[in-house]
Image 1 (cartoon, rainbow, N blue to C red):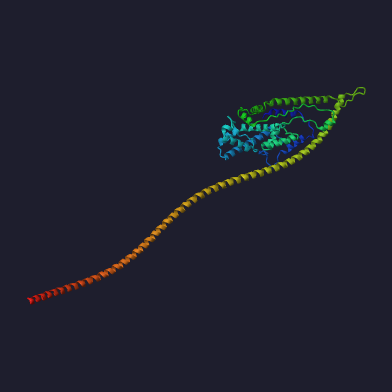
Image 2 (tube, rainbow, N blue to C red; image 1 turned 30 degrees about the horizontal axis):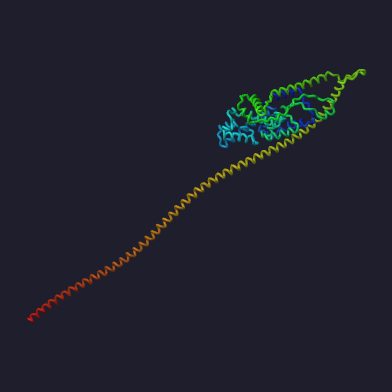
Length: 488
């Protein structure tokens, strides 16, 4: 957003001039390669997650605005996925959205932007007073815009030679993974930067070495060479300041970037002033070129100097320049053809690499999904096993208590059986004794009867004896009486 005035000025300048660059330079080849290869095959989906039918311009031919729209859509998907993941972790929707608006930055120690958003939001949810300051973004759209601006500034602070469109192209190619985008930016720095068609790379490239060696004229062009700034961009300060900005997104991002760089390094680069200076320098270069072309049109090339007039050195220089121009046009045509062939080869190779990358990403996502499913299954199994173990322990305790009760009942039953056996023995003994007593009673009854009979017989005998004694006493008395009578 901060480079938007520069984008419009550079696009306006491209309409009025042709880019003067050696056809053999690798920059032109890489530009055509990027433009031709960035468009995915018709059967493959767009790597950015947007269908090929939605945007007619592939990445390589996309403007800065189209790249920004694609990145904003990708950020929108990332924040939606992060909110869904926070909901899966058990947070309510309102708390998750509040945490994302307060501290859900898409950059951090993790490579995946969704993982960074979730991690930052969870840090805020664990300690809201310490993790985030006052305020927050009003909605996700502003957060996405400021996050995109922060990612671009982070990438440009790590790779100072990258333009804004190139930085967005790297972020889109790497699926918002900042470390991979920095590596891609380093590879772009080692080689001449690929020109993103209709984007920001409008600088006039220097002529080729071969042209300088063969010719006598040196083109003096005025270019705005930016001195690399060693300042580091602080994303935390940027997002804290972004929360306090007004509703205007473009001016808010520009003021936020200026304030963040000012707090980090002590200087605030004026993006608007630099853009105006570059446009002024480019316009002055165009005026010089237009004036030279007008003078060349006024010259009469076929007119010959008279023999007695000394040849004009300016005419000789112009003839040499025209000769060099024709030679350079021939070289330009040859090198354009060579660059187109190399671009086609690079496009084919890049298409193959992108296909392999998509396959590898699909395999990686499938493996990650399988690992996640396996982990969830293992967690569910462990949870079920723990529940079964707890239930088994409860059942074992109940079984032990039941066994104790059964043993106690068995002991009581044994005691009762012993008592019953003792009672049976006692009853049988009593029965035997009763039988003995009955038998003894019968014997005693018989003896008693016999004794009664003997008693009756003895009484009869006694009565008879008494009668005999009485009879004997009477006889004795009579005898005694008779004796006395006789004595007397």
